[in-house]
Image 1: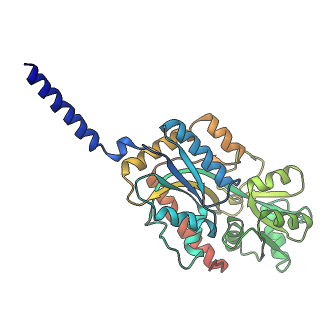
Image 2: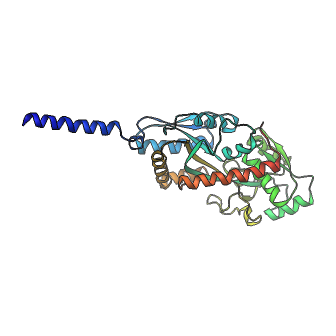
Image 3: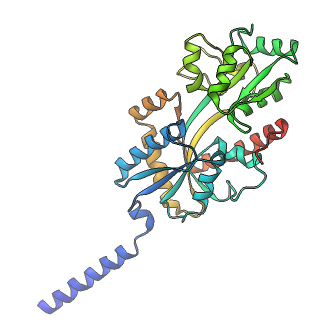
Length: 324
């Protein structure tokens, strides 16, 4: 009898051992630290969003989500790093609208953003704001359009880079209104805003965190937000879409994994991120960054990426912008 019991116990232990050995990666995920690769230097909005979400994923899943900054080539270095990484869910990318702009801006990339990445979750959205200096007489978007049409050779807009959202927001505005504006490129937002306030540049479509303090300090005048909806951080600023129907240019951050990452891991991350974005504390912290929570399914993110690539292709072509 004792011999039978010993054999039964050994057999049961063997079954459990085999089950553990063949447990799906999804069930055990994450069993080690996860790397979140960011294509920009520490200190910016992308880094802040990545660290905020990574910190909460660490708390919820019991493994450290480590942010690794790999700046360069408008986030292409980071994207290439993740595209080459094992598709096991332990290396993921903080992608952005820059990722979809780069598809058209760069003639040659070492990866295909749609084919080489599995969408995981949309994290945040945040608009740019159309601002003018105080010498420009326009108080509304329509007044600016009328002013620009009356002064076709005297309107200059600033940007922080060839394929930046600051440039493409303005280029889309030009496409949809037919106004003439000359592009002046700067090495960053700060010097551009300095020239804008000094009157050497008339208009800029800059990020909300950069310009909101200047708007509140009456150093610049806001005409409209580039999002389709009025923003809670500045409900007094109308949308450009209210005047130019269909206009929208919204920046965003999202998580992506290498293509082939097990669906269960993608779904698990998506579920956890959506839960995190629903937390009041996280929403308040995002509001402090003048960002709104994202959320949704991986499929919705896939469709969003496809539509963004198509839209930016038209804008980049019309603008003649190139990074190569």
